[in-house]
Length: 170
Length: 361
Image (cartoon, rainbow over all chains, first blue to last red; front, side, top):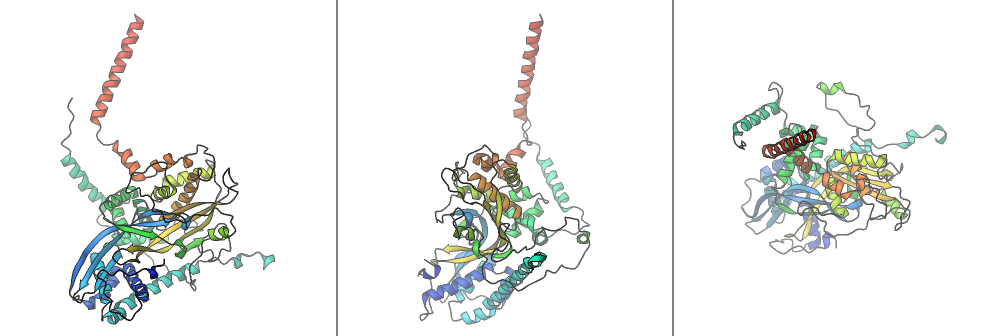
């Protein structure tokens, strides 16, 4: 079963997109939740600043710092084993309109988890376009740039064996 | 016999105050920031994360500062912190096939699809001290080239297609966790891999080297070494689907080992596996060699008595925090123990002297 096939839990989930396909919505939500989890704390806070004061909300789960055991597979593809833990902070919020936002973000920043949960909640409301444009789109673009810059450095270190070929083979 | 058990508090406080002063060093020299350690001593940070078994570069950098650069002390601090964290869950196994590779080399296939990508390596440097680093200089600038699109396939996959390499049967059995239950021997491979990935790098290096020198030689080639970022995904029960909770840098080494076959297995290549937090290449290669040596039983090889084959020897001595705890405790007061030893030696000497006197009479 792929993730897209997984039924979205009904518990507390707000679904204003009555016309949208649930699987597509899950795919989209996974994307922004991942983007928020990976986001550099400082950038997330700076991009969120215009959304303060935050919309009224209640905690379903106040930010909590913990560890997640990361697993690998023997031989990359075999049986799983425990590799070690990483720090993660989680939080869950409910907006006054009823939209519920969840966050599991890398690191130990409680405010990052709060913001990520609020963004997740807002993305399920009529403010999704505004949040998408002002916060998620810049985060995604910057991440793409960072990744491309790194990949470009790696590409420059790729060995070109043609230059090493012996004279008689050339 | 009276043994002083109190009276050290004032001395201990003074010792710790002086430790703080020594840690800071000459106040005329600017203080080192945690971010500087994280960014500029990143391989030390990686080692502390790997052996501390907690991926958090900021915490590892703080631990290095607090430990005055003593990495085992820093690892101790991280292990202690780790025990205070509630376990929020377990990730799905990371997909190293989808790694965004900074480095990817194969010692077995020159033309491996995806190429030989050297990355930020010490290899091929001349190992001459660079005095320019002692002077303030402009930030170095790396070259760039059009980036590769798409994932880099694993080298072992090519041999797998031909059936020339022992397969790794996929399963989703939950692995044992030595941070939750005490390690029991004999250990399954999953438990061994967990112990090896957090093991002391120096200990693994020595063991791996011993296999190369002939103690349970297993003829390892580095089939592939890759370093880069992978996504970490976890199933979130409240949501009913998995989300990415972050991204970590890993080093993965797969060895391809010559194997002429055994009573139970056909001639084929076999595999050793290393996967370590951070850019930790020496450790990952050593881990793969030791993993392979420890697999002698499942591959129907002979136990030749080599240390690297001896699971009890390897797994019970690989953890540097356990080792240093037991090693260093002998420096702490043992006055009572020693007093009884002293009494014993004195009595034995009296007995020997008395026996000698008797014989002389």
